[in-house]
Length: 168
Image 1 (cartoon, helix red, strand yellow):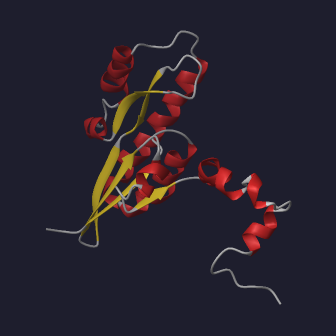
Image 2 (image 1 turned 90 degrees about the horizontal axis):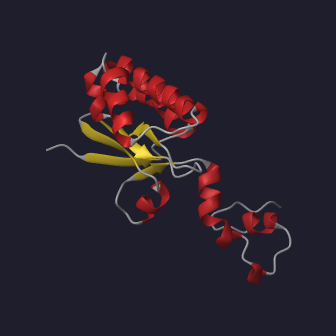
């Protein structure tokens, strides 16, 4: 049995699109065409959600994914899924990233789409998370700039982090 390395990433947005476009195609060169198509689908569906006044039902989005988006590459049905977009006012359904699995140097690599990658990582459910700095900041800013620290300049906190080389 091979070792398994697991990672999480938010299932929609620029981070997953960029990770798939710039890294996954190199990690899985045999699946480059399928991964490129997945990115295209995610981008097209995001535009569909942004431009539509009346959101589609979950069934309608599933049919769109099944009958149009993934017709050329049916294996994309295992990589993508339908989910609600909680970040939008009417919480429309849209196509998002579900998972990708492959083998790298004899090890199995699994990337999962997860709405809360930092929490999943901090609970030790995966080996690492792919996240943006704004997501990390949103998660940890309350601990960094706690009012009871009495620090007026946040640079003081950064300068005193453990392992940081002190300037002379």
